[in-house]
Length: 465
Image (cartoon, rainbow, N blue to C red; front, side, top):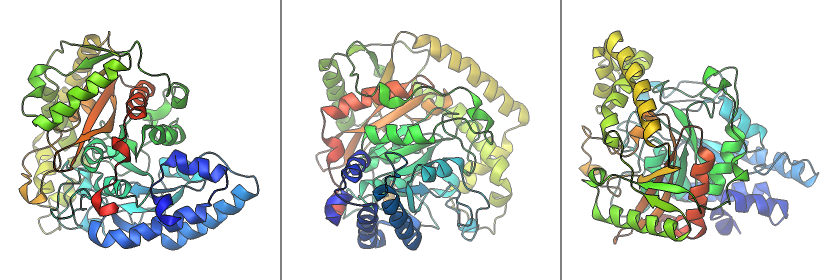
Protein backbone atom coordinates (compact mmCIF):
# COMPACT_ATOMS: atom_id res chain seq x y z
CA UNK A 1 0.00 0.00 0.00
CA UNK A 2 2.66 2.54 1.02
CA UNK A 3 4.70 2.09 -2.16
CA UNK A 4 1.58 2.53 -4.27
CA UNK A 5 0.54 5.70 -2.41
CA UNK A 6 3.92 7.34 -2.85
CA UNK A 7 3.48 7.20 -6.64
CA UNK A 8 0.09 8.94 -6.72
CA UNK A 9 -0.48 12.55 -7.76
CA UNK A 10 -2.25 15.07 -5.55
CA UNK A 11 -5.53 14.77 -7.45
CA UNK A 12 -5.36 10.96 -7.37
CA UNK A 13 -4.73 11.03 -3.62
CA UNK A 14 -7.64 13.43 -3.21
CA UNK A 15 -9.96 11.11 -5.12
CA UNK A 16 -8.79 8.14 -3.05
CA UNK A 17 -9.48 9.97 0.21
CA UNK A 18 -12.98 10.86 -0.96
CA UNK A 19 -13.61 7.19 -1.86
CA UNK A 20 -12.13 6.10 1.51
CA UNK A 21 -9.65 3.76 -0.22
CA UNK A 22 -6.97 4.96 2.19
CA UNK A 23 -6.52 7.58 4.89
CA UNK A 24 -4.27 10.61 5.51
CA UNK A 25 -2.40 8.44 8.00
CA UNK A 26 -1.60 5.96 5.20
CA UNK A 27 -0.36 8.74 2.93
CA UNK A 28 1.86 10.38 5.53
CA UNK A 29 3.38 7.03 6.49
CA UNK A 30 4.09 6.31 2.83
CA UNK A 31 5.89 9.65 2.51
CA UNK A 32 7.88 9.13 5.71
CA UNK A 33 8.92 5.66 4.55
CA UNK A 34 10.22 7.14 1.32
CA UNK A 35 12.01 9.93 3.11
CA UNK A 36 13.67 7.52 5.54
CA UNK A 37 14.80 5.31 2.67
CA UNK A 38 16.00 8.01 0.25
CA UNK A 39 16.91 11.11 2.23
CA UNK A 40 20.35 9.90 3.36
CA UNK A 41 21.38 9.83 -0.30
CA UNK A 42 19.27 12.59 -1.83
CA UNK A 43 19.56 15.30 0.87
CA UNK A 44 16.33 17.02 -0.14
CA UNK A 45 15.20 18.08 3.34
CA UNK A 46 16.52 20.55 5.90
CA UNK A 47 14.08 19.16 8.47
CA UNK A 48 11.31 16.55 8.51
CA UNK A 49 8.36 17.06 10.87
CA UNK A 50 7.66 13.40 11.58
CA UNK A 51 5.76 13.68 14.86
CA UNK A 52 3.73 16.72 13.87
CA UNK A 53 2.86 15.25 10.47
CA UNK A 54 1.62 12.05 12.05
CA UNK A 55 -0.55 13.97 14.52
CA UNK A 56 -1.93 16.18 11.74
CA UNK A 57 -2.72 13.07 9.67
CA UNK A 58 -4.65 11.53 12.55
CA UNK A 59 -6.62 14.75 12.97
CA UNK A 60 -7.34 14.97 9.25
CA UNK A 61 -8.47 11.34 9.23
CA UNK A 62 -10.96 11.96 12.03
CA UNK A 63 -12.27 15.11 10.34
CA UNK A 64 -12.74 13.41 6.99
CA UNK A 65 -14.40 10.33 8.50
CA UNK A 66 -16.80 12.57 10.44
CA UNK A 67 -17.83 14.42 7.30
CA UNK A 68 -15.81 17.56 7.99
CA UNK A 69 -13.39 17.57 5.06
CA UNK A 70 -12.54 21.17 4.23
CA UNK A 71 -11.66 20.61 0.58
CA UNK A 72 -9.88 18.47 -2.00
CA UNK A 73 -6.45 18.93 -0.39
CA UNK A 74 -7.44 17.89 3.11
CA UNK A 75 -5.08 15.23 4.45
CA UNK A 76 -2.44 15.53 1.70
CA UNK A 77 1.23 16.14 2.65
CA UNK A 78 3.31 18.98 1.25
CA UNK A 79 6.88 20.20 1.68
CA UNK A 80 7.93 23.85 1.86
CA UNK A 81 11.10 25.42 0.52
CA UNK A 82 13.14 26.70 3.43
CA UNK A 83 12.38 30.30 2.59
CA UNK A 84 8.75 29.83 3.67
CA UNK A 85 8.45 30.66 7.33
CA UNK A 86 6.57 28.65 9.94
CA UNK A 87 6.38 30.32 13.33
CA UNK A 88 8.62 28.59 15.86
CA UNK A 89 10.50 26.63 13.21
CA UNK A 90 13.99 27.15 11.89
CA UNK A 91 14.06 29.03 8.57
CA UNK A 92 17.59 28.94 7.19
CA UNK A 93 17.11 30.48 3.77
CA UNK A 94 19.73 27.98 2.69
CA UNK A 95 22.40 29.74 4.75
CA UNK A 96 24.65 28.26 7.41
CA UNK A 97 24.63 31.74 8.94
CA UNK A 98 20.96 31.23 9.71
CA UNK A 99 21.16 27.57 10.68
CA UNK A 100 19.58 28.37 14.06
CA UNK A 101 17.28 31.18 12.89
CA UNK A 102 13.75 30.64 14.22
CA UNK A 103 10.80 32.20 12.39
CA UNK A 104 8.52 34.53 14.32
CA UNK A 105 5.68 34.38 11.81
CA UNK A 106 3.96 31.96 9.46
CA UNK A 107 3.86 32.80 5.76
CA UNK A 108 0.42 33.58 4.39
CA UNK A 109 0.71 30.87 1.75
CA UNK A 110 1.52 28.31 4.47
CA UNK A 111 -1.48 29.43 6.50
CA UNK A 112 -3.70 28.96 3.45
CA UNK A 113 -2.35 25.48 2.73
CA UNK A 114 -2.80 24.43 6.35
CA UNK A 115 -6.30 25.92 6.42
CA UNK A 116 -7.07 23.77 3.36
CA UNK A 117 -6.14 20.72 5.43
CA UNK A 118 -2.70 20.09 3.98
CA UNK A 119 -0.02 18.53 6.17
CA UNK A 120 3.40 20.20 6.15
CA UNK A 121 5.82 17.28 6.30
CA UNK A 122 9.07 19.25 6.24
CA UNK A 123 11.28 22.02 4.87
CA UNK A 124 13.42 21.52 1.76
CA UNK A 125 16.89 22.71 0.81
CA UNK A 126 17.52 25.80 -1.28
CA UNK A 127 20.48 27.57 -2.81
CA UNK A 128 21.80 30.05 -0.24
CA UNK A 129 19.52 33.11 -0.14
CA UNK A 130 17.84 31.55 -3.22
CA UNK A 131 20.44 33.17 -5.49
CA UNK A 132 21.41 30.50 -8.01
CA UNK A 133 19.99 28.30 -10.73
CA UNK A 134 22.28 25.27 -10.56
CA UNK A 135 20.93 24.08 -7.18
CA UNK A 136 24.30 23.89 -5.42
CA UNK A 137 24.90 24.81 -1.77
CA UNK A 138 28.42 24.78 -0.37
CA UNK A 139 27.61 24.65 3.35
CA UNK A 140 24.13 23.09 3.60
CA UNK A 141 24.69 20.47 0.89
CA UNK A 142 23.52 20.08 -2.69
CA UNK A 143 20.54 17.74 -3.19
CA UNK A 144 21.17 14.76 -5.48
CA UNK A 145 19.24 14.67 -8.73
CA UNK A 146 17.49 11.24 -8.59
CA UNK A 147 17.74 10.62 -12.35
CA UNK A 148 21.38 9.53 -12.14
CA UNK A 149 22.52 7.26 -9.32
CA UNK A 150 26.14 7.23 -10.45
CA UNK A 151 26.82 10.93 -11.02
CA UNK A 152 25.85 13.84 -8.79
CA UNK A 153 24.01 16.10 -11.26
CA UNK A 154 22.52 19.53 -10.88
CA UNK A 155 19.06 19.39 -9.27
CA UNK A 156 18.25 22.92 -10.42
CA UNK A 157 17.81 25.92 -8.21
CA UNK A 158 17.08 27.62 -6.22
CA UNK A 159 14.19 25.33 -5.17
CA UNK A 160 16.49 22.31 -5.34
CA UNK A 161 15.18 20.26 -2.44
CA UNK A 162 11.55 20.73 -3.48
CA UNK A 163 12.32 19.49 -6.99
CA UNK A 164 14.18 16.41 -5.74
CA UNK A 165 11.58 15.57 -3.07
CA UNK A 166 8.69 15.64 -5.56
CA UNK A 167 10.58 13.78 -8.29
CA UNK A 168 11.70 11.03 -5.88
CA UNK A 169 8.12 10.53 -4.64
CA UNK A 170 9.03 11.61 -1.10
CA UNK A 171 6.08 14.02 -1.24
CA UNK A 172 3.34 14.48 -3.83
CA UNK A 173 3.92 18.24 -3.98
CA UNK A 174 6.05 21.06 -2.67
CA UNK A 175 6.28 24.84 -2.74
CA UNK A 176 9.17 26.70 -4.30
CA UNK A 177 9.90 30.30 -5.19
CA UNK A 178 10.92 31.72 -8.55
CA UNK A 179 12.93 34.92 -9.12
CA UNK A 180 14.66 33.97 -12.37
CA UNK A 181 13.61 30.37 -12.94
CA UNK A 182 13.80 28.82 -9.49
CA UNK A 183 10.75 26.54 -9.71
CA UNK A 184 11.13 25.86 -13.44
CA UNK A 185 14.82 24.91 -13.49
CA UNK A 186 14.42 22.19 -10.80
CA UNK A 187 11.23 21.05 -12.53
CA UNK A 188 13.08 20.73 -15.84
CA UNK A 189 16.08 18.82 -14.48
CA UNK A 190 14.11 16.67 -12.03
CA UNK A 191 11.36 15.74 -14.50
CA UNK A 192 8.38 17.32 -12.74
CA UNK A 193 5.82 20.07 -13.36
CA UNK A 194 5.97 23.59 -11.89
CA UNK A 195 4.11 26.87 -12.18
CA UNK A 196 5.81 30.26 -12.11
CA UNK A 197 3.04 32.61 -11.01
CA UNK A 198 2.60 36.30 -11.75
CA UNK A 199 3.78 38.72 -9.06
CA UNK A 200 0.78 39.37 -6.81
CA UNK A 201 -0.97 36.10 -7.55
CA UNK A 202 0.32 34.52 -4.30
CA UNK A 203 1.35 36.47 -1.21
CA UNK A 204 5.05 36.63 -0.39
CA UNK A 205 4.44 37.67 3.22
CA UNK A 206 6.54 35.38 5.41
CA UNK A 207 8.70 34.25 2.50
CA UNK A 208 12.34 35.29 2.84
CA UNK A 209 13.05 37.60 -0.11
CA UNK A 210 15.69 37.60 -2.79
CA UNK A 211 14.16 40.32 -4.98
CA UNK A 212 10.95 41.99 -3.88
CA UNK A 213 10.32 43.04 -7.48
CA UNK A 214 10.74 39.61 -9.08
CA UNK A 215 9.98 36.98 -6.39
CA UNK A 216 7.00 34.70 -6.92
CA UNK A 217 6.02 31.54 -4.99
CA UNK A 218 4.76 28.58 -6.99
CA UNK A 219 3.67 24.94 -6.76
CA UNK A 220 5.95 22.06 -7.77
CA UNK A 221 4.06 18.85 -8.51
CA UNK A 222 3.88 15.90 -10.86
CA UNK A 223 0.97 17.19 -12.95
CA UNK A 224 -0.62 20.37 -14.25
CA UNK A 225 -3.87 19.52 -12.49
CA UNK A 226 -2.04 19.44 -9.17
CA UNK A 227 -0.49 22.84 -9.86
CA UNK A 228 -3.95 24.26 -10.51
CA UNK A 229 -5.34 22.83 -7.27
CA UNK A 230 -2.53 24.29 -5.19
CA UNK A 231 -2.57 27.69 -6.89
CA UNK A 232 -6.29 28.00 -6.32
CA UNK A 233 -5.76 27.58 -2.57
CA UNK A 234 -2.75 29.90 -2.30
CA UNK A 235 -3.84 32.79 -4.52
CA UNK A 236 -5.74 35.80 -3.31
CA UNK A 237 -5.51 39.17 -1.61
CA UNK A 238 -3.41 39.52 1.53
CA UNK A 239 -3.37 42.82 3.47
CA UNK A 240 0.15 41.94 4.64
CA UNK A 241 1.39 41.98 1.01
CA UNK A 242 0.24 45.06 -0.94
CA UNK A 243 1.20 43.40 -4.25
CA UNK A 244 -1.78 41.04 -3.85
CA UNK A 245 -4.46 43.69 -3.49
CA UNK A 246 -5.25 43.68 -7.21
CA UNK A 247 -8.34 41.60 -8.12
CA UNK A 248 -7.63 37.90 -8.60
CA UNK A 249 -8.69 35.95 -11.66
CA UNK A 250 -11.19 33.10 -11.77
CA UNK A 251 -10.74 29.52 -10.65
CA UNK A 252 -8.13 27.90 -12.96
CA UNK A 253 -9.95 24.56 -12.91
CA UNK A 254 -12.82 26.10 -14.89
CA UNK A 255 -10.80 26.37 -18.10
CA UNK A 256 -8.28 23.58 -17.48
CA UNK A 257 -9.81 20.97 -19.80
CA UNK A 258 -10.85 23.18 -22.71
CA UNK A 259 -8.00 22.00 -24.90
CA UNK A 260 -5.87 24.07 -27.24
CA UNK A 261 -8.01 24.13 -30.36
CA UNK A 262 -8.08 27.69 -31.70
CA UNK A 263 -5.19 28.94 -29.54
CA UNK A 264 -2.27 30.69 -31.24
CA UNK A 265 1.04 29.47 -29.82
CA UNK A 266 4.28 31.14 -30.85
CA UNK A 267 7.51 29.23 -31.40
CA UNK A 268 10.82 30.61 -30.19
CA UNK A 269 12.92 32.77 -32.51
CA UNK A 270 15.57 30.98 -34.54
CA UNK A 271 18.27 33.10 -32.88
CA UNK A 272 17.21 31.88 -29.44
CA UNK A 273 17.83 28.29 -30.52
CA UNK A 274 21.58 28.97 -30.61
CA UNK A 275 23.37 27.07 -27.87
CA UNK A 276 20.41 24.88 -26.98
CA UNK A 277 21.44 21.21 -27.02
CA UNK A 278 20.05 19.16 -29.95
CA UNK A 279 18.12 16.78 -27.67
CA UNK A 280 16.30 19.74 -26.12
CA UNK A 281 15.44 21.18 -29.52
CA UNK A 282 14.25 17.84 -30.89
CA UNK A 283 11.89 17.35 -27.94
CA UNK A 284 10.74 20.96 -28.27
CA UNK A 285 9.93 20.60 -31.96
CA UNK A 286 8.03 17.35 -31.30
CA UNK A 287 5.99 19.13 -28.62
CA UNK A 288 4.98 21.83 -31.08
CA UNK A 289 3.89 19.16 -33.56
CA UNK A 290 1.76 17.46 -30.90
CA UNK A 291 0.07 20.71 -29.88
CA UNK A 292 -0.57 21.51 -33.54
CA UNK A 293 -2.20 18.09 -33.97
CA UNK A 294 -4.43 18.94 -30.98
CA UNK A 295 -5.73 21.99 -32.83
CA UNK A 296 -3.39 24.81 -31.83
CA UNK A 297 -2.04 27.16 -34.47
CA UNK A 298 1.76 27.34 -34.22
CA UNK A 299 2.98 30.74 -35.43
CA UNK A 300 6.22 32.64 -35.86
CA UNK A 301 6.58 35.78 -33.78
CA UNK A 302 8.86 38.76 -34.22
CA UNK A 303 9.98 39.92 -30.77
CA UNK A 304 11.62 43.30 -30.15
CA UNK A 305 14.73 41.52 -28.84
CA UNK A 306 16.04 38.07 -27.92
CA UNK A 307 14.55 36.64 -24.75
CA UNK A 308 18.10 36.28 -23.42
CA UNK A 309 18.64 40.04 -23.71
CA UNK A 310 16.55 40.72 -20.63
CA UNK A 311 18.85 38.78 -18.30
CA UNK A 312 21.29 41.62 -17.60
CA UNK A 313 18.68 44.07 -16.34
CA UNK A 314 17.02 41.32 -14.33
CA UNK A 315 20.36 40.57 -12.70
CA UNK A 316 20.88 44.23 -11.82
CA UNK A 317 17.53 44.44 -10.06
CA UNK A 318 18.09 41.10 -8.34
CA UNK A 319 21.56 41.96 -7.02
CA UNK A 320 20.55 45.39 -5.77
CA UNK A 321 17.54 44.08 -3.87
CA UNK A 322 19.38 41.04 -2.51
CA UNK A 323 22.17 43.27 -1.22
CA UNK A 324 19.63 45.47 0.53
CA UNK A 325 18.38 42.38 2.38
CA UNK A 326 21.57 40.48 3.27
CA UNK A 327 24.40 42.83 2.38
CA UNK A 328 25.60 42.97 5.98
CA UNK A 329 26.04 39.20 5.95
CA UNK A 330 27.92 38.90 2.65
CA UNK A 331 30.16 41.84 3.58
CA UNK A 332 31.31 39.95 6.66
CA UNK A 333 34.18 37.84 5.34
CA UNK A 334 34.11 35.70 8.47
CA UNK A 335 30.51 34.60 7.83
CA UNK A 336 30.20 31.13 6.25
CA UNK A 337 28.62 32.32 3.00
CA UNK A 338 28.78 30.20 -0.16
CA UNK A 339 31.77 31.32 -2.23
CA UNK A 340 29.60 31.39 -5.35
CA UNK A 341 26.82 33.42 -3.75
CA UNK A 342 28.85 36.12 -2.00
CA UNK A 343 30.02 37.90 -5.20
CA UNK A 344 26.55 37.75 -6.79
CA UNK A 345 25.03 39.65 -3.88
CA UNK A 346 28.04 41.92 -3.33
CA UNK A 347 27.62 43.12 -6.89
CA UNK A 348 24.53 44.92 -5.65
CA UNK A 349 26.69 47.26 -3.58
CA UNK A 350 28.11 48.76 -6.77
CA UNK A 351 24.68 49.57 -8.19
CA UNK A 352 23.76 53.16 -7.43
CA UNK A 353 20.24 54.19 -6.50
CA UNK A 354 20.00 55.95 -9.86
CA UNK A 355 21.06 52.82 -11.76
CA UNK A 356 18.57 50.75 -9.79
CA UNK A 357 15.69 53.14 -10.41
CA UNK A 358 16.65 53.44 -14.06
CA UNK A 359 16.52 49.63 -14.35
CA UNK A 360 13.03 49.58 -12.84
CA UNK A 361 11.88 52.34 -15.20
CA UNK A 362 13.38 50.61 -18.24
CA UNK A 363 11.67 47.41 -17.18
CA UNK A 364 8.28 49.10 -17.39
CA UNK A 365 9.03 50.32 -20.91
CA UNK A 366 10.20 46.88 -22.02
CA UNK A 367 7.13 45.23 -20.50
CA UNK A 368 4.87 47.44 -22.60
CA UNK A 369 6.98 46.83 -25.70
CA UNK A 370 6.79 43.06 -25.20
CA UNK A 371 3.06 43.12 -24.47
CA UNK A 372 2.45 44.84 -27.81
CA UNK A 373 4.56 42.23 -29.61
CA UNK A 374 2.59 39.28 -28.20
CA UNK A 375 -0.85 40.88 -28.48
CA UNK A 376 -2.02 38.39 -31.09
CA UNK A 377 -0.80 35.15 -29.50
CA UNK A 378 -1.92 33.19 -26.46
CA UNK A 379 1.48 31.82 -25.40
CA UNK A 380 5.15 31.65 -26.31
CA UNK A 381 6.75 28.20 -26.13
CA UNK A 382 10.45 27.49 -25.52
CA UNK A 383 12.54 24.77 -23.93
CA UNK A 384 12.90 25.41 -20.20
CA UNK A 385 16.66 24.92 -20.13
CA UNK A 386 19.52 24.96 -22.62
CA UNK A 387 20.84 21.55 -21.52
CA UNK A 388 19.81 18.55 -19.46
CA UNK A 389 21.17 18.37 -15.91
CA UNK A 390 24.97 18.45 -15.87
CA UNK A 391 27.41 16.95 -13.35
CA UNK A 392 27.79 19.18 -10.30
CA UNK A 393 31.55 18.89 -10.75
CA UNK A 394 31.23 20.61 -14.15
CA UNK A 395 29.26 23.63 -12.94
CA UNK A 396 30.74 27.01 -13.78
CA UNK A 397 29.47 29.20 -10.95
CA UNK A 398 30.19 32.31 -13.01
CA UNK A 399 27.50 31.25 -15.49
CA UNK A 400 23.76 30.82 -15.20
CA UNK A 401 21.41 28.13 -16.55
CA UNK A 402 18.53 30.65 -16.53
CA UNK A 403 18.90 32.06 -20.07
CA UNK A 404 15.43 30.82 -21.07
CA UNK A 405 13.67 31.57 -17.78
CA UNK A 406 14.84 34.94 -16.41
CA UNK A 407 13.00 36.95 -19.05
CA UNK A 408 9.68 35.60 -17.77
CA UNK A 409 10.24 37.16 -14.34
CA UNK A 410 11.69 40.37 -15.76
CA UNK A 411 8.63 40.93 -17.96
CA UNK A 412 6.22 39.91 -15.15
CA UNK A 413 4.73 36.98 -17.05
CA UNK A 414 3.62 33.53 -15.89
CA UNK A 415 4.80 30.14 -17.12
CA UNK A 416 4.63 26.41 -16.57
CA UNK A 417 7.40 23.89 -17.07
CA UNK A 418 6.32 20.38 -18.09
CA UNK A 419 8.34 17.24 -18.92
CA UNK A 420 8.50 16.61 -22.66
CA UNK A 421 11.02 13.83 -23.17
CA UNK A 422 14.34 12.29 -22.15
CA UNK A 423 17.86 12.18 -23.48
CA UNK A 424 19.33 8.93 -24.75
CA UNK A 425 20.94 8.51 -21.33
CA UNK A 426 17.66 8.97 -19.46
CA UNK A 427 17.79 12.60 -18.30
CA UNK A 428 14.56 14.65 -18.33
CA UNK A 429 13.78 17.37 -20.87
CA UNK A 430 11.25 20.15 -20.40
CA UNK A 431 8.89 22.48 -22.25
CA UNK A 432 8.19 26.02 -20.98
CA UNK A 433 4.79 27.55 -21.74
CA UNK A 434 4.76 31.30 -21.11
CA UNK A 435 1.64 33.46 -21.00
CA UNK A 436 0.77 37.06 -20.19
CA UNK A 437 0.95 38.18 -16.59
CA UNK A 438 -2.17 37.08 -14.74
CA UNK A 439 -3.08 34.46 -17.35
CA UNK A 440 -2.07 31.34 -15.42
CA UNK A 441 -5.36 29.76 -16.50
CA UNK A 442 -4.22 29.65 -20.15
CA UNK A 443 -0.74 28.38 -19.29
CA UNK A 444 -2.29 25.59 -17.22
CA UNK A 445 -4.83 24.86 -19.96
CA UNK A 446 -2.09 24.36 -22.55
CA UNK A 447 -0.03 22.30 -20.11
CA UNK A 448 -3.01 20.09 -19.30
CA UNK A 449 -3.69 19.46 -23.00
CA UNK A 450 -0.06 18.42 -23.42
CA UNK A 451 -0.06 16.11 -20.42
CA UNK A 452 -3.38 14.59 -21.43
CA UNK A 453 -1.61 12.99 -24.42
CA UNK A 454 1.76 12.47 -22.76
CA UNK A 455 3.15 10.14 -20.10
CA UNK A 456 6.54 11.81 -19.58
CA UNK A 457 5.32 13.22 -16.28
CA UNK A 458 4.61 9.69 -14.99
CA UNK A 459 8.16 8.40 -15.40
CA UNK A 460 9.91 7.54 -12.12
CA UNK A 461 13.62 8.31 -11.51
CA UNK A 462 15.82 5.22 -11.17
CA UNK A 463 16.80 6.16 -7.63
CA UNK A 464 13.13 6.36 -6.64
CA UNK A 465 11.89 3.04 -8.08
